[in-house]
Image 1: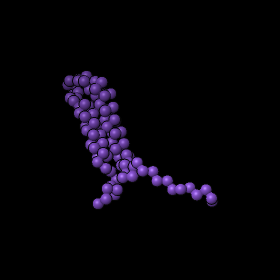
Image 2: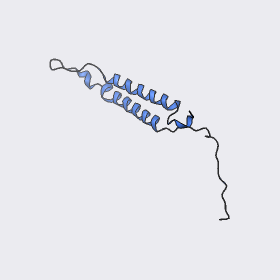
Image 3: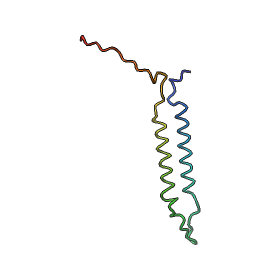
Image 4: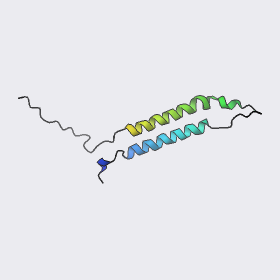
Length: 89
């Protein structure tokens, strides 16, 4: 099959995988023990869980969106083909 028929190239898949890894890291940062009715755990409101982890997840999702929107470079990337302009018309 010709490479031009694919919507993504190798770089797109690598960027998607990296974005997914960043999202997973953010979810891991967000996890932890919760509070129960018997015992209150103040760690559920830590800076890591409230601010850092959602920001990491957001950056992962943004990078995944970029990986999907990114257009693969074609074979004639450096070549500019301009048709001659007919000034007589």
